Length: 476
Ligand SMILES: [Zn+2]
Ligand SMILES: [Zn+2]
Ligand SMILES: [Zn+2]
Image (tube, rainbow, N blue to C red; front, side, top):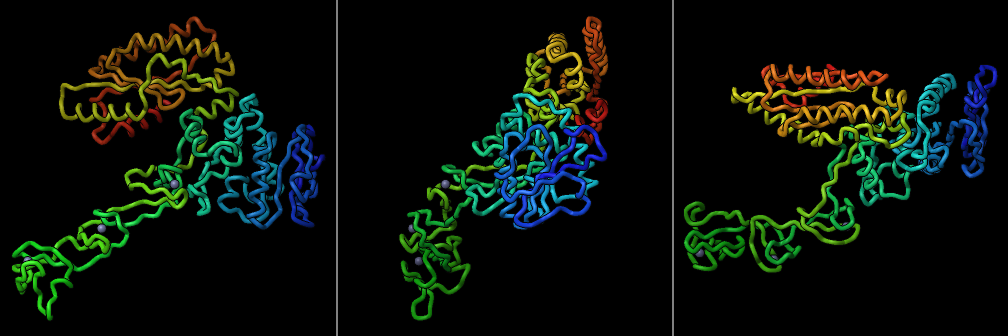
């Protein structure tokens, strides 16, 4: 590995320039366009003595991915340098892609990237949260705005899927448990669903073996077999037992069977058990875990959704504000319902309103742009007070059947049943007046955008999702 610093000739303050720590296998030097950077070469990560005062870019010059990954993990576990830029000179596989910033670019491009990185680093609010794994992850993602946390898979892994970045940043916790907590805290949000796998209910391994067994005695020793069904006595048995001297004779009632369809037919029970001689239509399925060896029923398996994820709005607010203070906590008194439930109810009202003319409702959105910026300017406590006063007034305006939710930190939605266009205009005016009142007593402007729509104005084609997305785009 090596450390590079750009030359002193094009200077800003010394501290702004990174040194390159280049981890190498043997004799190696970076391309000639890097000659004016400050580069330190090391054979082992442990040989490098970190200097917290300067910026470091890591370069790993090793063509063997199985050697590169452990080096990247060491870097990502380092308390002070876990979010540093890291490049590799060899090929980039999916796991390396999750832990490094890609292949080493030309020096001019790296200089530019480092500039952007510095800007983001400056706006990151370094606080005690960055000491904790969640804080480190937020920082890592904040510094890489387009980064998507993706799972990789390996057959050696008992759960098949794993998240290289989460494992590296937080080796002490189970990545899937941590991930669930991060999603619950709304620090990260889903991008894509990658897989929906079934896992052992005992150990959560996904290495499962499915075996067909006899539904009567549970034996493995079953086989598909041709069977016949005698119409005279109703006997069902394997075909071989009906064959007597080349003719078909029922082994039970001894009737000679001539015509399929009138004397006999093929039953749907075409499986037979060699242990208990039971004939059956469908076998049972037993699941055996290849990891812990326990058996279970297919219905007992745990479904696990594997997703790719990115930093959420809330995660970005924490990155800038430096704590887990939740602006939206000011709105808690509004008793939000989950967004999915809100959409479900809105869809239901849309269906009702389209069918029955006496059903009428309105949807109202309140958007606060730049809440994090305002928090910076006037302080969290003052902002929280402002929002709390607003929430109080809003609450007094809502009726019992009105529903509220938020789809982003700063986007509130209200669903107002039996509110026609006139009622909506009145509601809009009252909200506006209320916000005006609050602002009168404040030295600072709380920016807001209001949007409302009545069911009579909603396009036939729109469902809750589309409607809310369209209105959100209008206020945003
Ligand atoms: Zn018979
Ligand atoms: Zn059996
Ligand atoms: Zn298991």
